[in-house]
Image 1 (cartoon, helix red, strand yellow):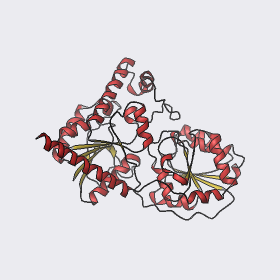
Image 2: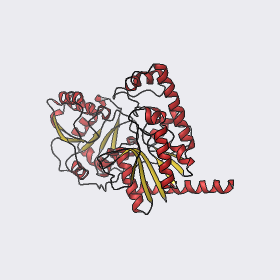
Image 3: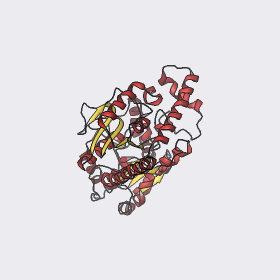
Image 4: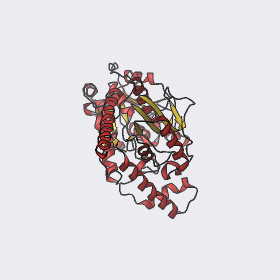
Length: 405
């Protein structure tokens, strides 16, 4: 099978959607498919071991959002040269908003995976201040105000018109696809609520590429050892975690380990202020093979996401490593924690504090959680699900073509 993946940026060491596409493409290539990746930008100067075709990406939000004829011409040429059986679209940012329709016009089957909330929000997260989610019934006027600083002072009526065209374009893209995939039930439900999923969608949760196995629990100590590697960003709720610890009656019996790139200066100052008087260790960036050590040296992973995580791969990593997890009770992670996790209301410092204090008071609960089952999967099982979808899609197209002729 000739498979062409389309993603916004690509290159070695990428995380999130980019890292997933790289791992999936490598796995499909190893299974005998002819695979290439089309992207708008190459990161790091390499191709991550996958045939990569870089288009002349647009440099601003108006590229992928509002269509880009130049990128469309380049993409059509790639389609003609590569001749894919199936095009798998993962993102439009910086490219053009008719990727699916161009793929269909080339004669290929087209599958979309909606990885985030981008089809409903030009900023992807529906979080104007990186701390609070937009309501599902947010009026377009609020979107106009949110985007105005990014669009060079365009008059509000022009932005409103652009957003209307954007919405219509993405609705047309979804309608043109042979299959639309969401990565969680929570994502599918939210997209339906905001009116951006009027076509049938299949929920196919992602899987991690790392061969992570559960490690033995660390020897018990007098303190609760808390770890997070979900990203030092307000959307990840790190300030919620530190506020919960800082205000706890047990704060001297808790130690927090934070892994990830240094946060933005203003947020770093906020976090350092919250950490004053607490035992907080800042470990900086980490390599893939360090994750096993997170489980070997800690009691619980806490991911207090404020963003509506449509998947949240760091949670999967913790679950596979055998760590109990605490997550926010919205978005996708709560779907996969099973008996190995606890969910608390997003942004609720007091609720998170109570959970952590209970784990200090009742450490035996950690062992119960470690023995609980979960619903996270590895990339191998995910790739097999995708393969079935690809084959059903191609069979359905061949059947329709035969019936038409």
